[in-house]
Each structure stands twice: as structure tokens, then as C-alpha cells.
Picture 1 (tube, rainbow, N blue to C red):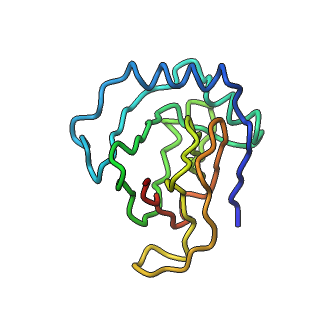
Picture 2 (cartoon, one colour):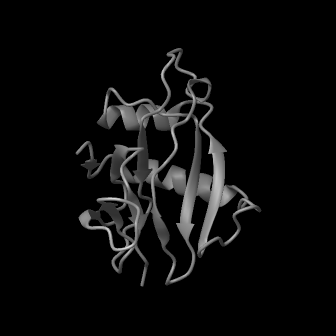
Length: 154
């Protein structure tokens, strides 16, 4: 419940702008190649991503601090987990509530694996409730408390 998937949320030009931003950022040193993933952090100072996400989901609250997560090895995956809420101070929209949802904006279509799996819980062997495969320009939004995992790429 509470999972939303919007195909075509971004135009090709918007995806290209994000890809250029991604390419311009350094890889985070602390997490360099953790589990075959690279992370690149950014601040959406002009609130462009906030506007993009709200275009698809008008009631969404998007924190300006974000990160790109890239699978850089064929067997890369992200273990089952839940996400943390961001404090209101990071939201910059004048409200007092913290964030409640995670958003994933796909910059590439992955033909072989790479799904985001929604799980019944974070324990090994948890039931898979749904899987969403990366599709360029699509937006996935779900509650922070929703257990999920990044499936391996092939």
C-alpha cells in the first residue's frame, strides 16, 4: 500500500539534465563501491526535482538533499532495508513535518534485472509483494517504512 509508479514522469530532456548532473558529481568516498554501488550526493537548491516529483504527485514533500545510486557491477544489489525520514529542517518548504516517502527516479532502463522489490519485511526470505523494473524517466514513490531491496543487475 502507498506505492506509486509513474511511467514517463520525466521528459527525455529532463532525464538528460539529470544524467549530466550525475556525471558531474564525485563519488562519495565513504561509500565507494559499497556492495557494488556508487553514491553521488547533491542538493537540489533550485527545487527542480521537488517540482518534477510534485508534478506527478502534488502532495509529495521532497527533501532537497538527494543522491544518485548507481549499480556499477553486474552482480550489484542492495540488501533489504527501510529508509529513514528526513527532518523538516532539510525540507525547506516551511512545514514542520518530516518526510514520509522515498522516491526513485530512473535514469536508465535496465533490461536485465535491477528491479526494486517491495518486501513483506527485511528478514531473509521475506515475501516479495511486488517488483518494479527500472524504466528511463519513470518515478517510483513509496513510504519510508516499506521494506524493499535492490535486485541484482545481470
